[in-house]
Image (cartoon, rainbow, N blue to C red; front, side, top):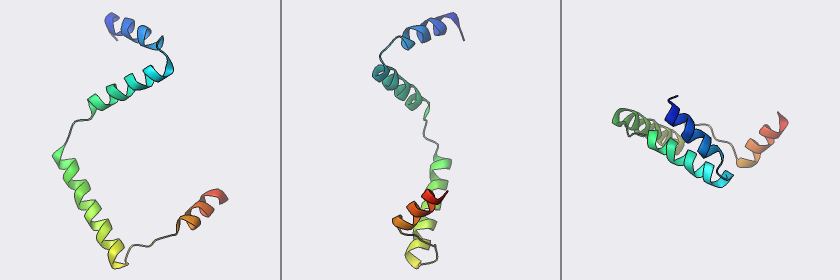
Amino acid sequence: MKPDSEALLKEALELPPVERAALVDRLITSLDRPDEAIDGAWRKEIAARLQAYRSGVAPTMSADDVLAEYRAR
């Protein structure tokens, strides 16, 4: 890291936890750039999963069964 970045990090680490969390959120959000290829692939996947669910092809579980299975682990 550049010296300026190190100084900025040191200053950020002195912030209260809530302000550090807000800063982290804004930094991460700044890295998220739309990508039409990825978004398009996800739209196709979502449509396929929804179709499988609606047609009864996709297996489903009740929330109670999911939680019971999770607790059994």
